[in-house]
Length: 289
Ligand code: SAM
Image (tube, rainbow, N blue to C red):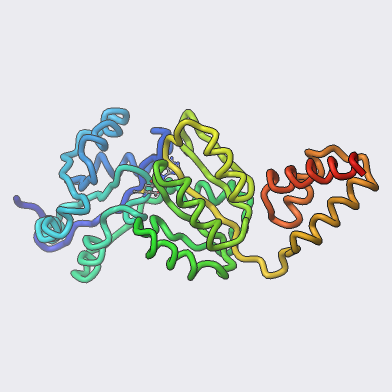
């Protein structure tokens, strides 16, 4: 291994697509072609991207369990003037992906670290969520242990920023149920398969999203969840008062049941199904009286 011994190489942190292979910048492709080594989370995965763009750079693995052991080797290459690109399987490395320890060490050793920005599921989904983007909190994956997870959620309950979570499709329903149990029934957006063929955004209250997913045989694909932040001015209503208001609306207007459930659900952040059931029951009471 010989190269310029006086100038250190550059560590590039390169964002790759989160689904659609064309979501990568010209600069990223150029850098991936030009560097000496690509440190990839899964070399087989990265090779698919490489074959799409005709990239022939040497790819070595750098994932959660070997990152620490590989750091000295990468630092040595960088000190010897070799450029390295760090990529993960999807999106921006280090964002719920490996690379933090390598970047930290490179910085410590005064090696230049340069980002090549691009896709990130959290940012892509946030931009279309309809929730406030002025302030958001990226939480990534919360704990899989129920007690710890509930504690983590409890701490987020009064957070006013939009909350962003990554979660596996297998656990998404139980995760939504945990959020519902800890926070109230807030608006949320479940972004599934962003940029892919079966891309979908389910945008309702938490309980409605749970109901929709429960009607499916299984939830498939990659999921990112956006939950509206705490809103202290949100209308809160007791069950009795809600009944009274619905009763009054039914007596005084000819509005369709679906429109009424939507309006009440939006105003009081309650599930449309809960409101709908109440309307049906109260309609029966009115008919019987
Ligand atoms: N570094 C990536 C990024 O920049 O978004 C995220 C990597 S993390 C290991 C993988 C998680 O990101 C998935 O479990 C899912 O929660 C989210 N994710 C990745 N791609 C996605 C997509 N196309 N649609 C929705 N969520 C996605």
